Image 1 (tube, helix red, strand yellow):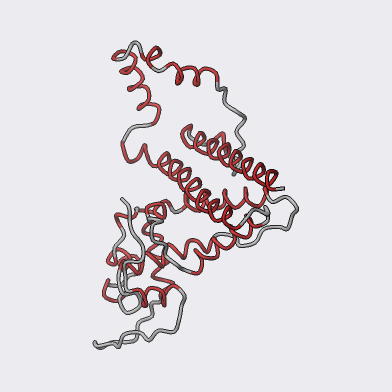
Image 2: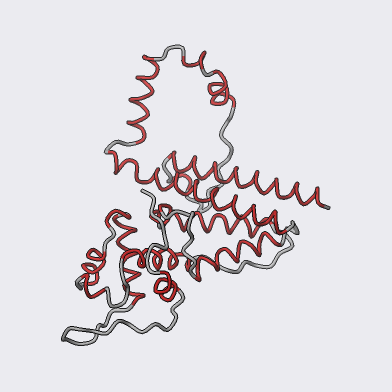
Length: 270
């Protein structure tokens, strides 16, 4: 499921994102002033999405978590569209915006990429928010600004840096999506990875006996490409399921090759 950000009222959404001074709609009913806050509502919504997924997110579900009715939330957040923007931006506040100063541009870029991947894995619903229309919030911009500064340290031209930004984000997002999917596959389908592969491997061998002859390059790769030592980001590779371990290793290698390409571009420029 793909969700597009920025579908609420533009001025109201941006006012909430940037915490600009905007007068709340006047109360029309009796009772005390609400004790809710935008931050509390956003935190509850993130918890719902983290635990139950984007499909479970609704104003009512958030209200239930806070012990309030959905209507009580509307005084602070106009609707689900604006809430989604606020949630997306809020989780990006978890990312660091500074890295230790170093003559090695590669180390902080690598650290940034892993930090963002882990953010997406912690909050997999974020991956469902389309990048076609950005949220335009302060924390999203802070993350972008951090990446631009780190890439600027390479000395490459601004036009190249701009395209590298557009290359790095999809690389991180794609790898994070694979990790997140690997974590939820067994629960979502009711069968373990081992059961799934065992059943299909046996059936494929029986139904396609000439598989190796039809796809020789694939078979050769499987036979010749010995697994490289896995340097898991969190040091817990032994406890990881195989699909997640492979996804992380693929990200490590892919990121390394991309950074090698940046180094080659720097050498060519000089």
